[in-house]
Length: 145
Ligand SMILES: Nc1ncnc2c1ncn2[C@@H]1O[C@H](COP(=O)(O)OP(=O)(O)OP(=O)(O)O)[C@@H](O)[C@H]1O
Ligand SMILES: [Mg+2]
Image (cartoon, rainbow, N blue to C red):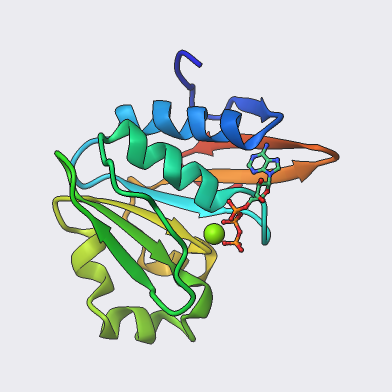
């Protein structure tokens, strides 16, 4: 996969394709980038994060621990993998120093970003993943749906 364009939709027919797309995205991110993932349970958000990590040169395996909200991975640029699913609200996120991640020098990638939408910086990249039959439609944009 060569690249991506804002607002264009790509079709992923397998977890490998989603990872490859994430890898390409990861290679194009910069310090301070914030990527907000939106998509239902099992749509492939973690799968995409695995690809992003690979694109950032992070060798460590990305996991989805049940109770961890933020997992930090160190590469050339740090990756903050945030899973907002279990947050009870914005206050919860702020209490754990969430804004330090979003406005820090690493890259934040957020699953269930809808839960903290009002905290997201203006330049957040949104990635919407939609299950469509047996494929996933993935769209990157810089604003609302
Ligand atoms: N095209 C595809 N892209 C990504 N995952 C796919 C695709 N097709 C099937 N799958 C399957 O869908 C599942 C996606 O799981 P994943 O953990 O990435 O989802 P998630 O969005 O992070 O879920 P959760 O909301 O529970 O965190 C995996 O079991 C994967 O094998
Ligand atoms: Mg997940």
